[in-house]
Image (cartoon, rainbow, N blue to C red; front, top):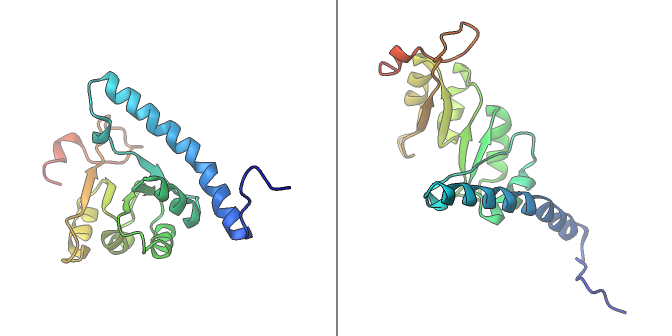
Length: 165
């Protein structure tokens, strides 16, 4: 008697299937919510970019979500991201985002691996990223972290220093 649902012939195929299934519904749900929210505001959902936070997830999970159509992935830790980027180097259309704080001693690694650095909070970091970005790569996209409240416990530049940065 045959199975109603095809059964993978190998354990690795089964594992790939289970990973894909695990993330597929969640990703589709988020994309549907983004679509509804964009349309409710009169925006084209295609103009909204989801950055899937992939920190703590293995490279195989990123690969599974990439197969669904996700292209932007966020990482907090430069070293962990570098290892993941190496494992996924065959996926040339991934856009990697550094979403956590960046130490100046890791700026060279970040400049050569990420498309976006979303936490530039000091001129020193900006200068190191600019100096280390390979000339054969497109310009690095950055987001300036602004400390709008002026609280000493918060990171970021003061609003009046943004233009200088």
